[in-house]
Image 1 (cartoon, rainbow, N blue to C red):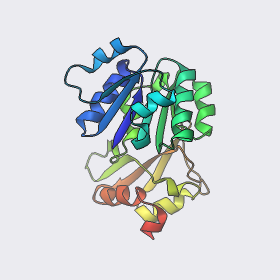
Image 2 (tube, helix red, strand yellow; image 1 turned 180 degrees about the vertical axis):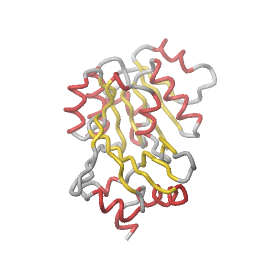
Image 3 (spheres, one colour; image 1 turned 90 degrees about the vertical axis):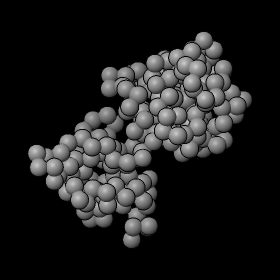
Image 4 (tube, helix red, strand yellow; image 1 turned 45 degrees about the vertical axis):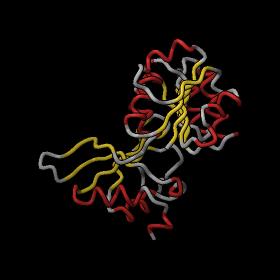
Length: 221
């Protein structure tokens, strides 16, 4: 997979190094060439000096081949503009934007661009959205037989009732995180784009649940 990261501050550099350590290719874009020093000499990815929403800069960073794009500079306007360019002009499948203003973050989330407000910000949270390589274990009971997981859900489940996800996976949806807030689902709650799904499942069924929800409903049927 190829990742393009706009912004080489503390979060951007940490994210770039982590992604590269996981075996992916990565390009980091920043207007300040000195910012790339945070990456260290061992970093093998591309360092592209330029504006993160400029067409030629993004092309140089490999945006046409990008599987994911993260806008993590210090400016809300720059981040959301770059995220929209990546999503709407270059059709990058996974786009995440860092937004300082939680109110604005909610608005952009409704536009289909996952955002994270600085109050809850860590590089790890961005990584979960960029590289959903598996479920994140959140809690396990004392016996170790029951686990609560944040499970990556395939986009094709959007618009389907959560009870269908439960029936297919064998897991119970404990709660969802929607627009940065936790929500206990009701019987008719439907999975929406951007939702983070947290399930409770028997440990021996957890691998199946992750596998099923990571596929489209048509593949599962």
